[in-house]
Image (cartoon, rainbow, N blue to C red; front, side, top):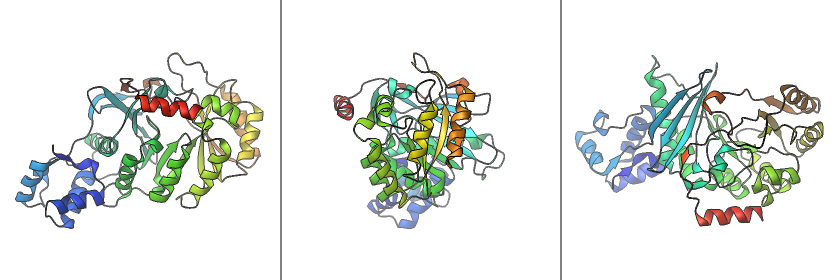
Length: 364
């Protein structure tokens, strides 16, 4: 089978070219063609020798997920459904803003963690995505956005957040090479501050990411105490708040930002009381952080409702008065189910027995 070059970061591509008997600078040339120019055809890589182009055509390919759905929201948010195999598709969302464009990408087909308020977790877990399937979302989005942009060299995607489907810390073997490509000056050239990985709090993965490829970190917190978080974010039963905060402080020793972002979905009558806000303020005294309040985005058969806007405002005010940095996320793309917590993709729930046992262990 031909090698998919989207699966390889710079080191992997150099090793592949060494196997072919080619010099390292050829790997850098191809890296630029693929990721900077968005080229998927070796025949079009004009500064490569014809013999090398032919050789690559025989042994390699550039294969990204196939776009099977492309939806544009009224606010400009664009959502793609990307098919990764015959049974599974994942969702990728582009959010345009005045001074930046953010791409939200997925790391797994489905998710094993089953957070109570998240549509993705309700569909079960099928498999991890490969590096090529992860970086392929960025590769495709770049190409698709360039099609309608007059300036082909303009950077449209300035930020990447791994906040789509799946738990990135459970797929780091694929996620880390993809992150390295995002940061590589010969590929996408994003700064570490502009690439964010979000986790529900899988501590071993946080420690590994810190050591191997530290980027900005976001934590899906959603509750200020263990009792409530055990219910909303089941992984908390294995990695409770005290251990999670310690892991955040370890991460900050190498992080490109001097704070962790705590994501906090606002659920009516569940986690939005003044007491909850005061408990969050107390957490901020134990770790450098900021809070991002997220109005809950409904999905079919959900048991939760969105907190009232005035209640969210009062909640944020309590945090601000305590000296905590707090923002309230503007809901984007909810009319096409592209908002936070709504991504469900198209996944055949063939959750592996091992994954189910892992989840049972997490909840134990």
